[in-house]
Length: 201
Image (cartoon, rainbow, N blue to C red; front, side, top):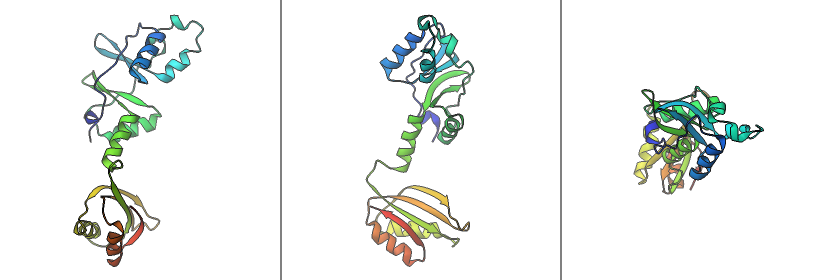
């Protein structure tokens, strides 16, 4: 999934000569935590709720401008980047959001909330579903065998997660399925010689 599919496109921006109270009012009005700073159509900075909180320590807050507190060279990402790249960027820099810039132009904002929403959608967490965790060893076509059992029971795989096992020749697959008789599927999978770790109805 690309960033362009999940980024916020309705942008609320501020100028660098605006005051901190101006930024506070904008954030409250639009229930946001980040503001791109724009001058003559160009992104020149980035101000966050955290920057605003720090500005409160200033004795003359009315005289503090956005220019004084903004991040002047903000981290950005392209709208064609993958959502995983955005997630890694936010995690690596411990930030809540970044401007999305294409060819020097601000086209959106992507935040932790946007990325979480994308993750929830991909994982099918909000859909009525079942889950089965299975250890698949190095048998040929193991995943295909398990997939066929699931289809034979009238279910479909919504999402797949995978992690390493203490035995490096094995993988644990976390399969989220459309609502089904998960115990019957687990039984058939075990009859093929695979290990079912857990099931969730």
